[in-house]
Length: 469
Image 1 (tube, rainbow, N blue to C red):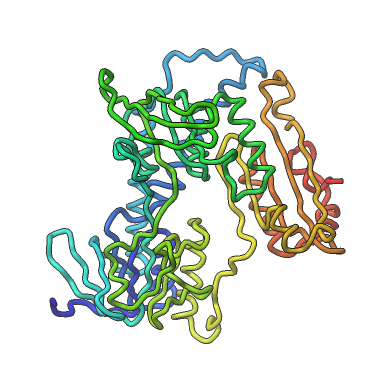
Image 2: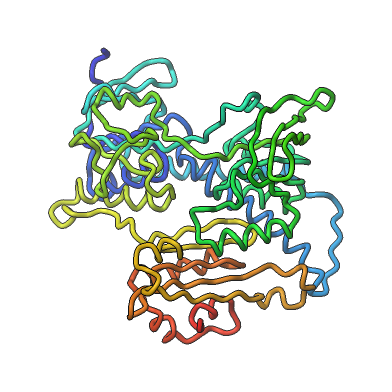
């Protein structure tokens, strides 16, 4: 074993949002000697192949949607050329690269050292790092945070390697003409919407009758219906048997499948995207060397204080598989740093994992906080639950033909005689921005009466949530 070359108070393995958030709080605010190790680009999934480039692409798709809708308002817009995918991708990549640099500068400003290399635990305090130049370093740390994130899964279907994952979506230099996406979670649904509105013929393969099944039924039903209206071809109850290169069309593939309508389908496509779930990035982390326990899916087991089974090693973010959202990892990381280095005032600091809002950037966007209606009825009983619903046409669509109007639907789920809001689910234009504010109310324990007592802002879609009957 190489000699110990560095020592620190806090060693963070993983330079994604959660790891960096924790490292900066520990080093910048509390003065702990902190080192971050990252084997890829700073910022992790969110910055490089997740939230940020996804939202930029969603913006582009939304602009395309708006251009189509503009004629209803009297505009005559003629496109002189198709969407310039290549220019857009290069500009998006440049923006992400700029963010990588900002992360680097922020670490330096907060006195956090970072190394580009691959880290492996060799004991509960020692980590071996394989550096880019082929050399190795041993770092000894009093405390270690494992925040290595996750990676996209690829199935064992023959020929599956011909497809890409969400990572590969952001590497596409040419816009696909005909894409197949396999998956029913938010990644598949978001990317299907982007492809469709930017002009790609889009096929979505799902295993069951509906998608977004972790969300409230109102979200599942309305988004699925809207996607079909928009022209996305949904293959329900589908399986994929094999993928093969097209014999006469370079760059194209043949996807063999079955679904609820056909048993031996073949689809010719030039893009296949697997969005069938993610696994924790733990393969070469050396968890066994330190005695770290994992669950049946390989996620590191950590409690609400981010403690693992080893007393000086902590873990958070996607590698734990709890709530895989960037702001959750950041908040958990900061609270952990507060608890470890902030002194007596922060000895019990931890993230409250209840009532965390989330958004699906579909077309239309949808947002949720709290319990779904089925979950609320199971917990409280039907007689203790009251549900308030509304479906309406947002004023934005008033001048459009009925078949061109996108839906808006809201639901409040209330529990008990005081009608405490235990679930809020919204779908329609502006839902993502709207949910952040209403999320504060739900987090504070608002009741239906509190919503009723707030004077509506007119004319808005949001007013529907404070005028529900």
